[in-house]
Amino acid sequence: MMKKKIAVLTGGGDAPGLNAVIRAITKTAIREYDYEVIGFRDGFRGVVEENIVYLTEKEVSGILPRGGTILGTSNRDSPFKFPMGNGKFEDKSDQCIQTILKYAETLISIGGDGSLMLSYELSKKGLPVIGCPKTIDNDLRVGDAQTFGFESAYSFATEALDRLHTTAESHHRIICLEVMGRYAGWIALYSGLAGGADVILIPEIPFKYEKIIAKIDRRLAANKKFSLIVVAEGAKPKDGEMSIQKHVVASIDPVRLGGIGNIVAQKLEQMTGRETRSTVLGHLQRGGSPTAYDRILSTIYGVSAMDLAAKKQYGYVVTLGSNNKILPVPLAEAASGIRNVAPDNGVVMAARKIGISFGD
Image (tube, rainbow, N blue to C red; front, side, top):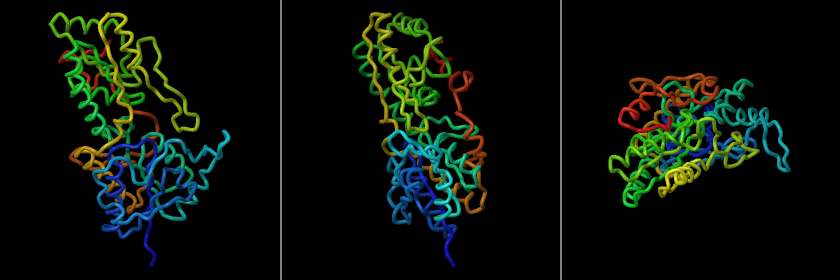
């Protein structure tokens, strides 16, 4: 009797915890359900090109603490608009479905909003698929559940703030730290609160330079001669625009934000006459070993995704509910947009009450 087979791929930007999910899926599939596991390399590109690897317990041994993904990933290869070179694109979605079903009965798609949106569109065309929520941005619409990779990212940003604090204090400077997050301010919010920032600028709360300067002046009046400002890459001034670094035409998300940290630093130096510096963390937030919590969360998500696959409970994304119970969320919901920071979020309110400014 032939063994059942499950396929897995990682799509979009890398995040700490991807390998932990792959490991959990593989171990659960083999030990609990007697499945074979097929991995597609480099996201949906691997499906189009039939670039596969058979995942065994040996293949996933030792990968729990490793960052990145052993399968590789891509955020540029939509099967509905697959790049063929010379600026040409083709719809490869039907071919993708045929290829996945050639090797397995179900696909577990590990990704953020872009990858899960593609998975949802494929599911509407008949592909049995289960989603696993990955993004350092924590912006997936999966109820209140945290995505894996988020804690690792904001923990690193917090460490960066700790280091910048000593330099800012020693030189009596204003220092801006630009962090990732795209159109949501979760990384800036959490790292700013944990790292003792004086000002946190996020996309959901447009800022005014005068309000930031008022906060800096209050600190000066209290003989605090330095200030730390965390700037989400999607932050924007009131009545202003987000700072776009470039456009990547072939990408699922073509807009690349960036540069707002430098803009804020230059503007504040001009308006205050005080020495101001800017640091951009960039892809450092994506790399490195996942935190202990992200390893646990990734493992739970991987196990739970395989449980849904074995039950043939397709069309859902696994998320963590209360009491560490898995709460499947419809794939349609996760693919319907991003989850932003609400202005009345409890973390925002706590930050305000201890004197952190949001520039508003």
